[in-house]
Length: 339
Image 1 (cartoon, one colour):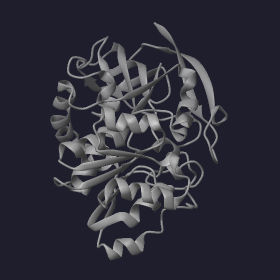
Image 2: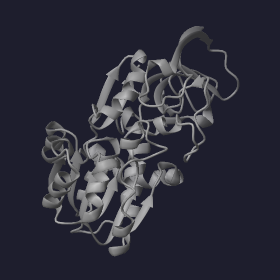
Image 3: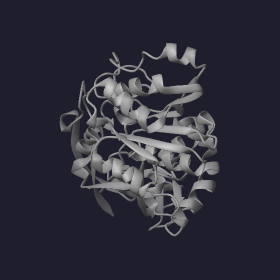
């Protein structure tokens, strides 16, 4: 049987915002003729993440640049259409790295079966997937939270930040989230139960933003940074003795400022004065320990103790614009495209 596959092929490196012009939408037929241990998957959900924009840069970062002329890489959740693997049957939900396409032939070793009864399948791309792994190990290993610590999370309404904030509360921290817009700040305090929230958009100057964060915190023991830019410039002078700073992302600079960042590197004197530690973390550093995080977090999700906020965009053709929207702060929680 043949299926009509659609693929977004990455063809041009963006200098600023990414859009349709950096991709070509191609279509071709794909059959269900499979080799031994091969599985045909129909993608249903595609993860959209800030790291994709890093990979599109020309320079080597923690990855080689994303090659031109291939399917845009991305984590996906889909269903098995056909299988020549004893481990998978038609209808099974699976996690894969199939990218921006509707169908993919995968070796069985590339797939992880998902149990829809244990957790929503989309959680595999969020709280029980890469964002959850980043949040859990970034906070618990690098942040070393202690009861009574003041934890500040930038990008606190995003996929990683919203989980860090909740994990921090469960660890006994006083948690202050930084986000853009009154509605996101209300989500942080009213839905996630944070102790305070600061709307960075309400403070156009560095001094004003720093004063607002200072008033909300009284000093910072742990800073989990997902944003960089002026937000980080505002937070760093407020760190306490032996503070721990976790650098997870710098989305403020992904949009064309990777090679010449204009804000947030000016904090080394504060690291010295406070004898603080700073550590960069990537989800891949903890891939082999995924089971540790899932064993703790999955029961919390099942019991409703953790909010797994998701924003869905419908339509395969919306993928480039969905990636672009990350840098405009439109999503709440994990951003997914439903295809």
